[in-house]
Image 1 (tube, rainbow, N blue to C red):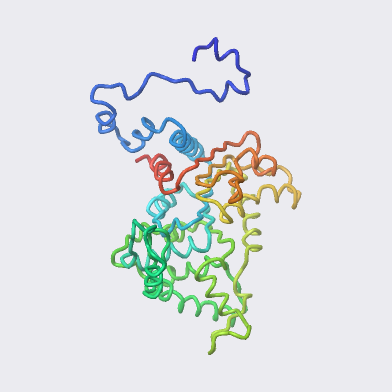
Image 2: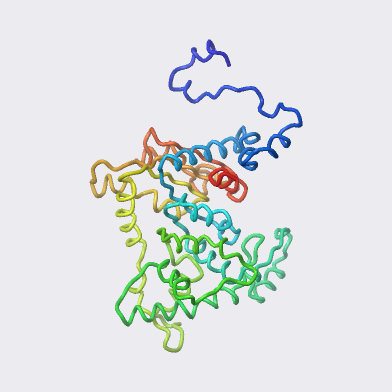
Length: 368
């Protein structure tokens, strides 16, 4: 596109136009010969090939995030779906160790399943052709204690039931002392007190909750009850006619709730944004993201705090289209109307599978 054509467009539209440049792949030996000679072959390959549509959105997001972090910005990452079971920790843990993630908000399932991978990795199994299972075969898996998560089987006896007694003791001890803690704080004691050890087939460095524990970065777990261990905790708190037999009662007061997490976010965001902009990377949809992103408008409109820094950028990877009767998938522009983003905030929606798009972003941030 020449300058004459560009000049016919409005300034507001013109700033979004990226003109084509000479193909970078037009070299002797092709792109593979070029990539093999570079210091960062994966990142280089991404920059050479991810040019358009979701690939282009992925690369553009990765480069923006890299610039944001390189210039002192901070990053919140949110996890939905079953990403921990799908081994998101391989990438996320390294990002945490390198100081590129400053807070993680995860569903109760994603949080606990990071621990389950840590203690039972070699007991997991896979079935790529999971869509061909019959109902009777699914029942066989159930009776064997294998809980299917799409193509992945979570081994309950080697994970959930190994950790439950330790957590129950913590809950009961907290009740005796009239103390209350966040869900993730109880789990972290499993590491701190060496109550669990990594599975012999696991690499502890692939556990993102372990990396977060070592770096002492905050974790937010909204809706803890919506998880296996959250269900178990509820069963110990329950006082109805089908209550468990024996001395297994626990007071619900030992567990801090979403209200407490939101209060923590008020304090964390104001402190951390005082000297640096904070970006938001949403992996999947749901409460893990919808909960923490609201801290900015709530500080402004509910607490009437003046001079609240807006989220610097919002990037979402998810396969749900916007508002077609399922997850709303509200884009950046809609978030402006809720005062979650400003007109100056960077925003990008990548309509793709997180397990496909996120590895590219991680590779660029890690300079692989």
